[in-house]
Length: 236
Image (cartoon, rainbow, N blue to C red; front, side):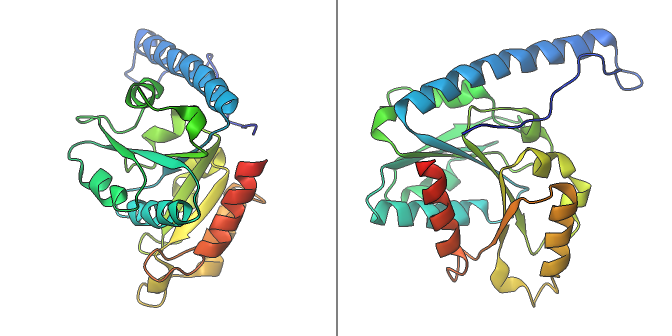
């Protein structure tokens, strides 16, 4: 499955107070990451595994959404695994393991995003060809993960009703690099006075035509549609 990530320009001027040398170092780091990500993507495709990168801010309900997704895939007999990134603790990995899927924790120790080499290191010993789906739960952040390719097949941008309808307008980079958007905690719509139509309009303004799912991991609302789409994407 092809990706359309924005092209980074090497001619961009460094921010005020930042030297060209710092920009050059950062560009080299990103280039190294992207080269590894391309190699990983080729490896994933050769193994026939669909890799899904979940990106959102903290508190969006990303782990609950992923746990419900993993549970449904396991019950359907789909071979699936996950790696989850956090600054510290393996709390989320323990929660996800309750789904029955194998899960590994990546602790970044302060880094605000996952990088391709971290993911690759934590896949050591896993037979990728035995998997149909591999999920990557990125560190909770709407900015840093956007620039880092992890070799994924699909990037999912998650937005909860507790965050407000204008998140896509404030953080267009994430939605511009995502393949699909998921609105979570839809069961709290009325309590949060969340305008679903406005949220969808804002997503459409940033990324016209992008598919949007409204879900609740707590009640199961919208999960059937998401799972059907995921299955079709995995067969493409």
